[in-house]
Image (cartoon, rainbow over all chains, first blue to last red; front, side, top):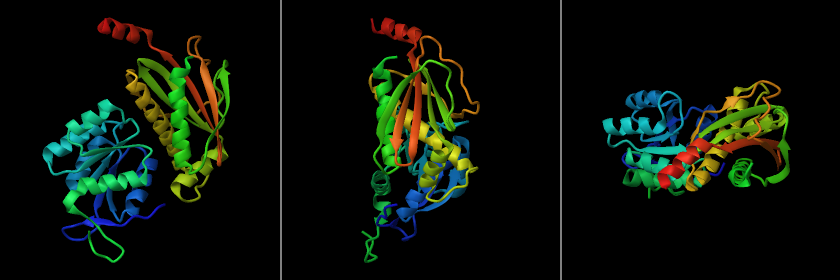
Length: 146
Length: 165
């Protein structure tokens, strides 16, 4: 898998911490491998919206990557509940069902961005940098944060 | 069965497989299935309900499924690994999700149901108004078969027409 310049937290230079939410183990592993090539750290995984909320409360990750179609509670509803309780939460929806209605609903209910599956690493990388904004820093080969 | 319903699924499968398997994909044989579905190996089925109803089956021979799942996992998987099933499910989800986006842009609305594993060797014969089309995608890891059986939901479509009138 392609390597990317590591994205770290600008406040302390530590890896960006991710919570990955998807009912597919395969999809979670795939995303985990991807964010690790960005220099990120997966601190938790969840397989449905309800677990996602409790895992967010427990771990307070920097970024949540959230599927939409999941059992028990779908991703858009879970994203809304997380953002209502934590307005600073950065939730990125990652779904194969990326039509306009879903994208608009997700953004209206608190998601920061939407990435269509199959996920292209270079697309997710740019979205992560965009969503982190000034809270993220790209570490160059010389080791200096940009 | 109308090709305008089928083509988004062929395009989506071609794109998903080409990207995921890091190689070119060729659309091989297309054939109509008049008898019941005969499973080839590891098969995941996704049902659609709404303006268009039916189901899509993604079916890989066992050795092809193992190669594909190992490719995605980045390591050789044992033949019994649960990730093989998960991989086929996720591929089916991605194909259906991408195709549904295209059809949604054309004004069709659906519900996509979670994938289920087809365990029996043979499925039911499709009904007269739901012909099934079998498409074979030739990939570097073996053939991937997609079986598509869809029909317009006439009641839903007439409801839309009334609203639009």
